[in-house]
Length: 224
Image (cartoon, rainbow, N blue to C red; front, side):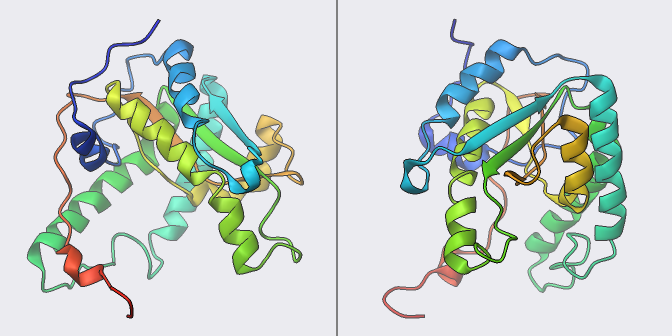
């Protein structure tokens, strides 16, 4: 049975699938049926050589969610002081709208770090092979590997948004990838984790497009 979807145009879906953190409803369960429905759309994504080497690990067990959440919290505490942290990027920009957007995002990232384990479902997308090995640690190997899992995961996130479910792409748990692989039985030598995504219905379903600088500032035709 198809779950009820929001009345969103294609453009609205693409422009309002935000990283949802503070507005995740921790108390409302997300059924396996709706996850499977989103997965049916996820696996329609393209992969390199049509290999379809993806695997998707969904965590609903409270104890395991709490352990993964704690690994994420520990990693976030290290990341927070890094120069690339969301708390530091663009904070001195002359673009006040960009600075305000970054401040809001930083606050919500802090919230998620403290509450990751409370999300109804956690998703870890995995892809066969490891791009950190010498034989694949080159630009073709890296982009081919990630390009074979990121589109499918984004398909899942779009399908979730259409059904009133929020998600957020995070990667800091990868500081503890081996420990999490052992916890969940993921074959570390054969599959690489690429993200940790909290999943939950949203508190309210109305989201606005995020502020972005003019696209002309990042567009190039024919040469840089």
